[in-house]
Amino acid sequence: MRRLLVARLIQSLIVVLIVTTISFFVIRSAPGDPFSYDAPNVTPAIREHWRAQFGYDRPLPEQFARYLTSAAHGQLGYSFQLHEDVSTALAQAIPRTLLLTGVSLGLSFILGLVIGVAQAVRRGRWFDRVSSGVLMLLYSLPDFWGALMVLLVFAYWWPILPAGNIVDQVLHDYMSGWDAFVDRMRHLVLPVVSLTLLTMAGISRYQRAAMLEVLPSDFIRTARAKGLPEREIVWRHAFRTALTPMVTMLGLLLPALLGGALFVEKVFSWPGMGWLAANAITARDYDLVTATVIVGSIMVVIGNVLADLLHVAIDPRIRE
Image 1 (tube, helix red, strand yellow):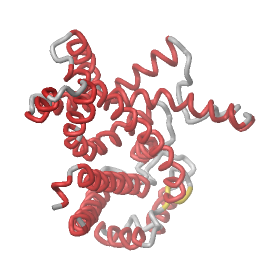
Image 2 (image 1 turned 30 degrees about the vertical axis):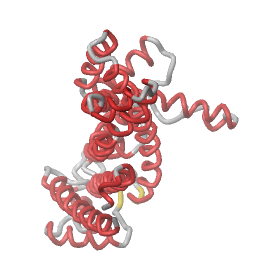
Image 3 (image 1 turned 180 degrees about the horizontal axis):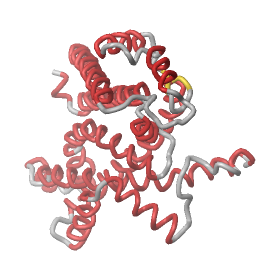
């Protein structure tokens, strides 16, 4: 167990280093730099001075070495778009992204597992056919298009929820504690619904297939021969066995969920990491783009390590 954890941590460090290297050089291979924007009051001489001041006039290998040194000391650079340290911007954005993805991931797994089990138990019946068609439709939708449709229906055609931002920008500071909490939850609903619908479909299909493999097993037939209630057979015996491969899917789902969060945060103006990254790419904000990619990769590898540990906890055979 300890050797497995150490090996996974070493692999995670290597992955983060590779991702850092790729993101650093890819963003700098695009035309322009953070000082290439059109500003009539900024002369070319001033731009060159800024490039020299922040080291953008030096060779890329030297820039990369300096960036790694700074990152190792916890200094992720300066955001020219936001006019603040990248660490400060990320400290505000990361909790918002974790809130959005955490709630969406929890709801997706709960709903996906329940629907997948219900489909497997009622295989071939009307519920299985109808729900499979609806979920397949949701699964095939692009992230940004699904978010736009949710925004269009529930914020414009049927305006019952706010269209964007994390809170009401005008009234939130003047609200009482409960009203402020309700305002924050109302702004959270549409982004969470968008992410949940897009990820729930894949989880339910995966759970349905896992349950269909378990239900014909000998131990299930033995449980039925003993006269155990069908509900207990399904949820205590079949579901627990079919849950093991779902833990593996949890690790695979995290990168897709973070990628989907980028589009969802941009559509709903949710000021999280995805929103920061999208705006930083447009502005060629090198340090902010690189830092968001690094933090995203760290979140993914942490999620994969936790999924491995959970897999070990569920399946005792791995601990042997």
